[in-house]
Length: 322
Image (cartoon, rainbow, N blue to C red; front, side, top):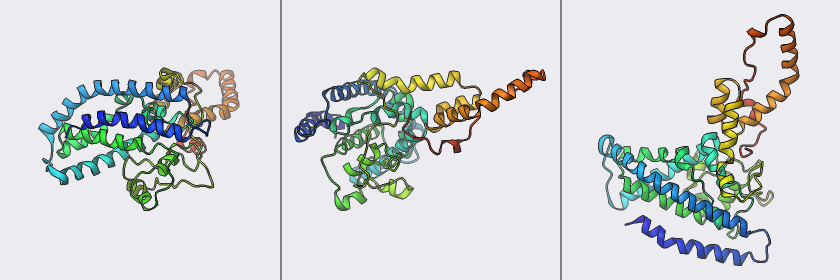
């Protein structure tokens, strides 16, 4: 089974579904925007180009791991495919959760969350920086377990293809399926910036991982979803959307004092930056008095960094607010 051919055949289906959904919402201004949709499509093309280049490098690496270090050779047939599907879906959950809790990964993933609309075209809103962020690393355990590179690439693409269909507001809750699968309702909550929904529902296909690891929250009619990131980026420019967080992160690394702060700016939780800035603002008067006293005593050379901040200070900050 050539998965890439299947996905190529699905491409017009995706476009047709977007057209049908846009027609369905034709009397609801704001559900679709031409600029937003064109931006999403452009980001998708950029992402696909970067992915193709990345696979050229990554697939031989998977093959090397498989040939030299695999623990087992997985069976073929439906049993092998079922094992492959479950393992990859769990690894996707790990990747997705890490992408919300590690700023380096969030810098790529924020692109997908930056639109204030949610429709099927939002599924196309991806970042060309995923290979740089290290998404491919999360699939290496499959090669070590004993799945071939072809199987790995195929199941990753199938998982992402399924997720296209959960980016919609046109489908209500789906009864008992909400306990097993990632559904449009579950994914709507994931894309919302309301405090109730932030950093929840990381499922790819199966929602069982969210239920097992405490990250599940149902969509509530009492609190409608508000989409986007807490600090909106008001542009449809695909280049700006792709690199705005990388630029901010690089500036923080350059300007923040101390190696611990620089490391946290790269690999800490995304909200850590807000907590650090708040700590600097609140401690500025005290630090100024300390500097004045030290200068008067001739002790400026003994002063160390005063920029440290604990992660506890981030409790009130948004995890999507960078």
